[in-house]
Image (cartoon, rainbow, N blue to C red; front, side):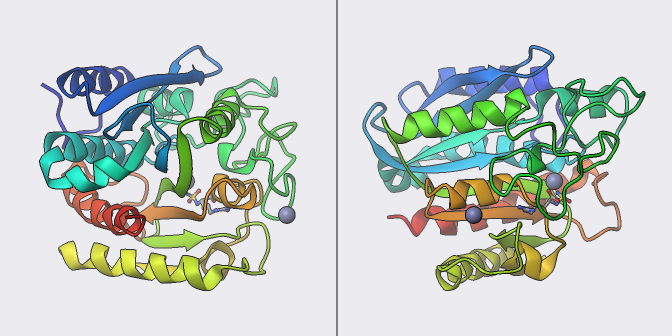
Length: 304
Ligand code: 0X9
Ligand code: ZN
Ligand code: ZN
């Protein structure tokens, strides 16, 4: 059976999506939003009642960065929680559709698992120089593309790619989000799950300026962090990207918010603060999931 307290392969995660969705057919559907550079399917699950009607919609992506294994693991735990205990969330699932993409950078994740644990980028070949493959998907979105905290050096960890949405993985996210917006999804909350720093980050990442509704974004982020900390005492900071970290233009969070598609947008940098860093031991998957879920729950219930 699928192990929620282990780091699973891409194939195992995809099998899990199929299995759990077939156990809850009226509350979920698996959707392939595109293919990675190496031909892996990019698969998400929609979770919610009343399929086909236009509903408030909550997006969560995991695995934009290959080495941040806790991120796909938390999405999988969240999917399991919402479906297995759906009775507990029936009101929420009536009103809100969750779209959860566990492994956005599928090729990178597999490469990190099999070849280079600390790989971050995609695996698209932009360069013939050994070791300089791929682009940083979180610099590849079309929001101040090429701005602060990005690189044109193909060997850089923050190589932005030759143009915005040059990576099929980010283009698939864009295309799906835009297409659903005119059909069944009224996008409300965007979450991108990363590690590590223990922070809930609002836009902007491209500038030191704060968005016009910063107070509103911050207030919900603060409430989510309180709920998160209440679970296991894990301390989190809340603020805009550039208040708490270095700038990074072309991020998915800024695109989601700046495009006007989402009312709220957050990057959640999960455990830890550096003791294990990206190589977070598997025995922290469940506690990290439990606490992150409470932050997600606060954000989702704010839409009821
Ligand atoms: O630099 C990033 O992409 C994220 N940090 S990580 O260590 N997971 O790589 C932070 C992203 C914050 N948002 C933007 N820069 N827009
Ligand atoms: Zn702008
Ligand atoms: Zn990251």
